[in-house]
Amino acid sequence: MKTKSPVYIHLGEAVENPPVGSSHWFGYPDLPPDVEIPQIEEGGESYALTLVCQINLSELPLQPAQKGLLLFFADIAYYGGHWDEPSIGSDISDNRVCRVVYVPAEKMGTLVSCREYFFEQDEPKSIGLTFNRDKPTLAEPELQLFGRTDHLEWEDWPSPCEGWQLLLMMDSMSGADYSYNFIDWGVLCFLIECEALERNDFSNVRTLILST
Image: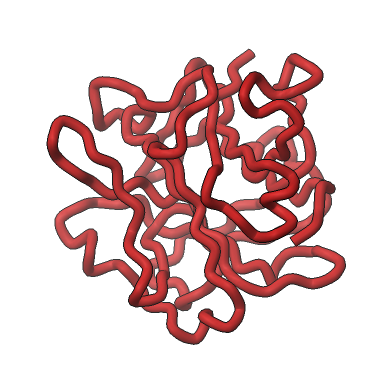
């Protein structure tokens, strides 16, 4: 996957049961049976990271066209009002609190919904997505793949992520069954090394929150 030009994400309607492998914000992840839902351990207990979104690469306006699925997970429960302490803040995070799972094209046919895993948890409903090169209007949340963000006040990302690429940006946002406020209405950024992005290696993604 080779791209640095921004792709903007636009929210559609809530979808109760989106097709397996389709793009959506929130909801439940679709994973191959041999891939576990990313989790984090805190205080001797483990819990699943929140699915921020899953992106079907074939739906993106990329040249050359791409195939496969990207799933973004992060420990953002605090910003949704569910925990006492945040694990992601204004400094670069470690890679325990955020994960990106890449499902290559040849494994797309093995995807299954993980809805049953969350039977005791109320996750926000899935929201359908569209993608283009047009910046969101002022009435829309800023959701973006790749490119650069105007929220970054410096020439480069903080250490140790100098020269890295923005992979995904999530704005503070609220809806019928969710509300996320990232440090005074900031944005959550997923970062990746450029060389790692080119070889589809998402094993060392980091996060931070930018708030101006």
